[in-house]
Image (cartoon, rainbow, N blue to C red):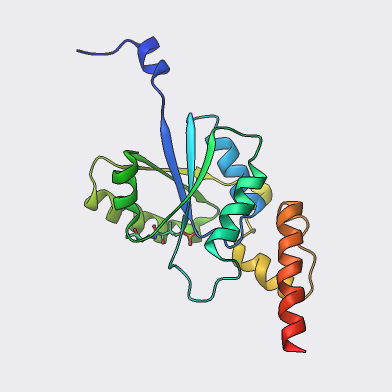
Length: 176
Ligand code: PNS
């Protein structure tokens, strides 16, 4: 039995937006917001065990993302460990969303998408181009700039900026 277009449009859709988010940047926020215009539910999945020395704990990263999207009921925030595909299967979601900022992102993303498809052929990776304004923004750049006393107010949400300042303030005090 095939569905009519109106039946299809009434089916609810979900997608998983995975990442390290250490911390979430304006680039991520833009992509997540835009994803909610396409999918009914966007699950932001914070990977644990990715980096050995993250700036923020997984709980802190989740908390910040939850606060940033507190007025958007389509955004859910969770964490996952192990293979992303195992998490998708557990959540019964078939779409992964990833952002592409520049050609340099492509090779790694393409490799990951193909590997994920090999592991689970019914899972699709959707790529979204980042806004031209944010092509240079990354969590790594934010941390480097902030650690050296640079202004990151254009690169992260104000509440994230506050948390970053608190982290580096604490680290400096320990180091003094
Ligand atoms: O924000 P990032 O660091 O680019 O996110 C990368 C992430 C977490 C999405 C990716 O490393 C991942 O999916 N890790 C989980 C382990 C896994 O499933 N790897 C892909 C197999 S090729």
